[in-house]
Each structure stands twice: as structure tokens, then as C-alpha cells.
Amino acid sequence: METLLNTALFDALYAQGYAVVPHFLPEFLRDALYTEACTLYHNQSMYQASIGQGPNNQVAIDIRGDFIHWLDGSTPAQKTFFKLMHAYQQHLNRIFYLGINNYEAHFALYPKGRYYKRHWDNFHGRGNRIVTTVFYLNPQWHAEWGGQLRLYAQDEQTVLEEITPQPGLLATFISSEIPHEVLPTRRPRISIAGWLRRN
Image 1 (spheres, rainbow, N blue to C red):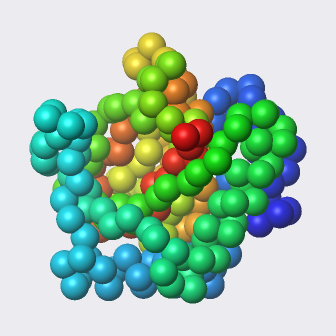
Image 2: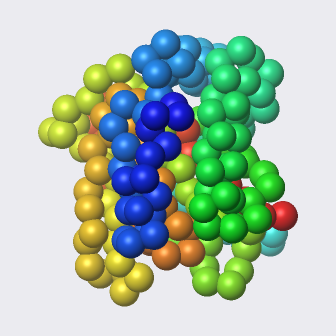
């Protein structure tokens, strides 16, 4: 991964608020994490994701349709993944002085037909999420299967990019700058969504 933490990635983050890096996850690690996620889902160890916080927390599959399971570093694949993310965190702090001191992530499985409507991970001046990361775990994906990550400008109307969930790809962006959505998927779509945080 060190070779993928290159100037182009950080230049893109600085210039446009997001970056896309194909084949960021090594294939062996992507496959191991994909197998874990599939096993968790089939063992009913994932739960329907919700929206809102505190008393406003609710399940609303017409807005957000994924099943999730938080990573805790309890398996060799997760340990390796967290080491990679620690390296990314260190680079971000060294280049941008962000003061990031934590990373959290969960598996996200979107069954066929599910989606996540446009939303923000963190509003300006609110919350702890600084940089969002999304890693795609499916061993293959075709554009006609849907499930693209659509990134918007801050006006929430202008589309910046639509990212097809290619195996091992990293999409990363400044959490307070990029509203986004997951388009309806025609196949089960598996990823890891994560946030580099300042607590």
C-alpha cells in the first residue's frame, strides 16, 4: 500500500476533496475480507443499518438499505486492514495536519435492489468524521450491475463522479465536503465503509 499512498492521491484530496485509487487493497486481503463479510451475512451476524442519532435513530430501508457489521480487529484479515489504515492515517496527518487519532469501519452489504439516498457523513463544523474511506470487496463487478457511488459537489446537485465498485478500489473523500449516495444495485454489493476521526 505504501506505493499507493502517492502524491497523486493527496493532490486529488487537496484539489477536489476526493480521490479514487484502483486496486488499493491487495487481492489476498480483499478476498479474505469478502469471505468474512459473506459468512457474517449468511450467519445472520449483520444487522439492518439505521439512520439518525439518539431519539431520531430509525431503520428506514427506503432511505438506507444496507446490512452492516462493525470491524473490531479480531481476525487476521481485519488486523492487516487496520494496519494499512493506520499508515494512511499517518500520511494524512503528516501532510494535512488533521490530528486524526481514530479509525472506525464496518462491512456494508447491499442486497439486490437496495441503495442509500444522498447524504453527508459529516457537516461543516459538526461531528468527528474527517475523512471517509470506501473499499470494494466483490471479486468482480460490471457497471450494468449498478451500485455506483455518486459523489456530489456541496450544492448537492452537481455530480462530480460516479464510481463503479471495482474489486479492491478505494474511494476516499473529505467527510464534510462531499455529499454522496449509493445507487440501486442489481447484485449483492459488499464493501467496507470507514471514517478517519478526530475524537
